[in-house]
Amino acid sequence: MSNISDMIEAFLIDTLGDDEYLDISRNDLANYFNVAPSQINYVLTTRFNYERGFLTESKRGGGGYITIMRTDSKNSTWLTGILDRLNQDVDYRTACYIVDEAVSRKVFSDSQAEIIKSAISPAALSNPFKLENHLRSQILQRILLKHNVKQREKD
Amino acid sequence: MSNISDMIEAFLIDTLGDDEYLDISRNDLANYFNVAPSQINYVLTTRFNYERGFLTESKRGGGGYITIMRTDSKNSTWLTGILDRLNQDVDYRTACYIVDEAVSRKVFSDSQAEIIKSAISPAALSNPFKLENHLRSQILQRILLKHNVKQREKD
DNA sequence: TACTATAAAGGTCAAAGAAAGTCAAACTAT
DNA sequence: ATAGTTTGACTTTCTTTGACCTTTATAGTA
Image (tube, rainbow over all chains, first blue to last red; front, side):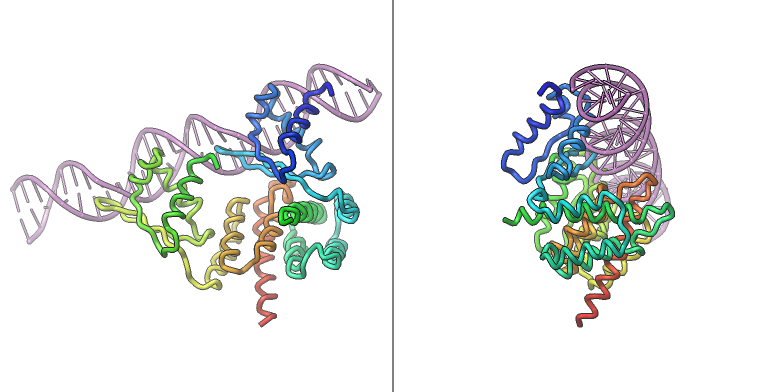
């Protein structure tokens, strides 16, 4: 393990331990390892992404932070497949199939599904740059991942 | 929670308790927290705004004061105001305030709110055309409108 | 009594500061 | 040669500060 990114990854995973999430300061961490702050972002995008079972959030400005969360997605083949599928853009109809399928698998309730469909409806995502399908994929992916984290937190 | 604005917010909400309103002196509060008086205004505009279900009033001059009130008007009034607000673009923070307030008004459940926040998160809406805030408004508006219709269908 | 000056509030706005994000260029290892 | 890593310049977001402005109450004076 000769590169710093791997060491930072190991450090973070170790610090995370069995916890569901971990709050860190990007600057502090960069300082601790004596690297450019942006390297932390590199580690986050290459190591703490959903393919590896993680999700991140952050806030800028005074008192800013980065949160690293575990998802359970690797334990569900269905979810993994869907998330993968969502790396491509999806149209509204396809997205609705996915949501309905999630409901029948008890991933979402009816009322949750309604909200998701509203969020990804053509009306909600209309924009001048033909980003609709792309945004829809991103949104759905995000919802699925975060929901997964929240579900786990309850247990 | 390492920034002072959050601490002032927490202090005020705690002091407010279950009361309808609270009178404070801007200078005293600024003094107590050792910040510039104008920071109190910052906290008021970012945290005790309409989106979060608050309203403020003040008086200058000798014996001046600031009143923080809960807007406990009808949900429909609030909703109308919010939908109006959403004709302008909103950033993530403000949008979350709206969602949180909707939860405390029993418009959404916690689990629905989580989904909405995921749908409008910066990660979900990242795109190369700086449409983020605009899309967020559209999505939130759409969700609120659709949800409102569904709710009425049940009655 | 009416008028004015002054002090005691609160308001506004822009600049500075404190984080995190992005992206491309340079470097390294396979 | 290619993929993966490291760095740094520039950007965006959120917070904090300070200088200057406006409003209100009150004390002093004609």
